[in-house]
Amino acid sequence: MGLELVTAMFCDPGGVVLAEAPTYVGAIITFVGLEAGLEHVECDENGLIPAALERRIDEVRASGRTIKLLYTIPNFNNPSGITLSAERRPRITEICRRAGITIVEDGPYGLVRFDGEPTPAIRSLDPSVLYLGSMSKIFSPGIRVGWVIAPRAVRERLQLLSEATIIRPSIFSQHLALAYLRGFDWRSTLQTTIANYRERAETLLEHLPAALPAGSTWTRPSGGFFVWATLPEGCSADDLFTLVAEEGVVLIAGSSFYADGSGQRELRLSFSLESPEQIREGLRRLGRASARLGHP
Image 1 (cartoon, helix red, strand yellow):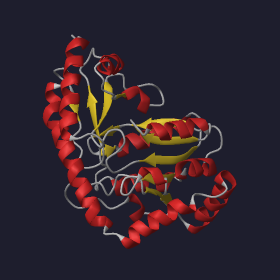
Image 2 (image 1 turned 180 degrees about the vertical axis):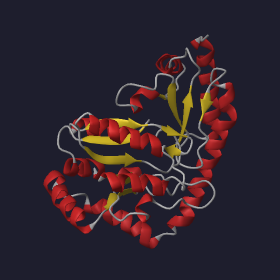
Image 3 (image 1 turned 45 degrees about the vertical axis):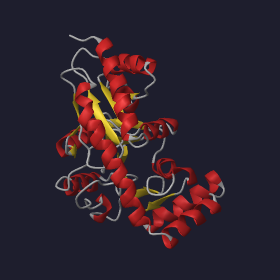
């Protein structure tokens, strides 16, 4: 809901939102539903590429369109699992500041880090950045509680828009979240949860080479929920999706994460829900499906 409110506030129909390639499917649905144009920016293993962002800004403006927002999931991106490097964050911030583009930093996975120190939020570099947070990954997705950190003037307008859109959010859910944060050692609980996610990610990455066609590549996330795989030339993620579904396994083909239907050889694998045993079995079934795929 926070992203929907921000998009409705900043984007007139036809206004352009820039986002990573690939990006969260829920964000694509939100932008398209509110008639905003979505343009992707190329990424690599270190996240958004500053030079690619500058090129995309120039291209969009040359077409006569107005860029309203840069939407980014900089930590353990959904779907790619990639993290925007600390070295690139100031550069990305400066490019957007100079271009007059508001950054929307979506941070639901930032606390789900397996090892090491957290990377400073983009908002720590620029107080005009809009930061979206959520309880869904650190407490419970079912309570549907999130927040937006924004400059005061923006926050007040978002509050009015929220009241007009949803009348009143669930007070019960908010009290549950507050009681959890105040009354429980949630940080220790989160560390236990992260240990479980780390084990599942390691299991997936250990057995993935035998489950995908030779020549496939994939990301190695240091947190979050997702691994992003790219199949070799000549392979179709949509075809693999169909074959693996016949084996009773669900994955998501990469085209779902691009506004223009790109990502025909890419797919997202999630390790957040299933046990290591189930992940191993799922990968065995994925291996059988891959063997049936056929590729040059």
